[in-house]
Amino acid sequence: KAGVTQTPRYLIKTRGQQVTLSCSPISGHRSVSWYQQTPGQGLQFLFEYFSETQRNKGNFPGRFSGRQFSNSRSEMNVSTLELGDSALYLCASSSGTLGGNEQFFGPGTRLTVL
Amino acid sequence: TQLLEQSPQFLSIQEGENLTVYCNSSSVFSSLQWYRQEPGEGPVLLVTVVTGGEVKKLKRLTFQFGDARKDSSLHITAAQPGDTGLYLCAGRNAGNNRKLIWGLGTSLAVNP
Image: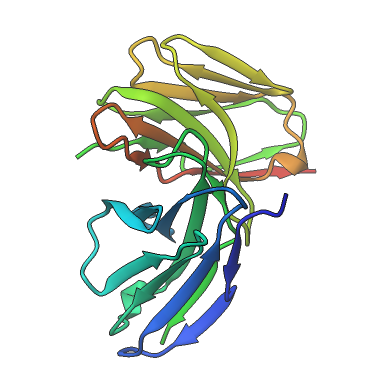
C-alpha cells in the first residue's frame, strides 16, 4: 500500500505570495490532518478534514485554509506569505474520524519564504 | 492550554549507552503516542499507550505511561546509530475534540 505523498517537497516563495500544497492520503483513508513544524514551536495543528468537511481547526490565522476532495486528496493554501510561515508542512492521514488512533505522515513540504 | 514538555531537548551519546527521555504534562490524556522523525521525513509512530501504568516494549525501546496518564518515558537500551532522530510524544486530549497535543521533541544523536 502506497504511503502518504506530498507535493512539492520543496518550495521557495517571497513575502506576499501565496502557495498551495497537496497531499494524497493512503488509499482508503478518509481523514487528512495538516501540521506546521518549526524548530521553536514543534508540530502545530492546522486543521483536519474528513469526508470533505473540516472537522477540527487549530489556532492559525485565516490566511491558512484547506480543502478536501471527494477522493480524499487534500490541499492547503497560504495566502499573503510572511517570513514566519517558513516551515515544514506535514500531512497525516488516518482511517477514522477526529484523527483516528494512528496517523501516517507524509515526508512534508519544506516551505521557505524569502 | 495543554502542554507536553519533553526532556532533554538534545542528547548526544555513544553507541551502546542507555538513555531515557521524558514527556510530562499537568493534563490527563486518554492516550499517548511516541513518534520518531528522521531528517527530511515525517514522524513515524512507534507506540501508543492507553492505560495508566502501561509498559510496552519494542525491541530495545521501552515505553511507560504514568499511572495518572499525565506523563510518559521512553528508555532505549544499548543505543545504536540507527536510533538517531527526533523523538516526539503526542497526547490525545481526553475531551470531546480529541486533538493531539505535541511535545517539541528530543533530538537524539548516537555516535558510533
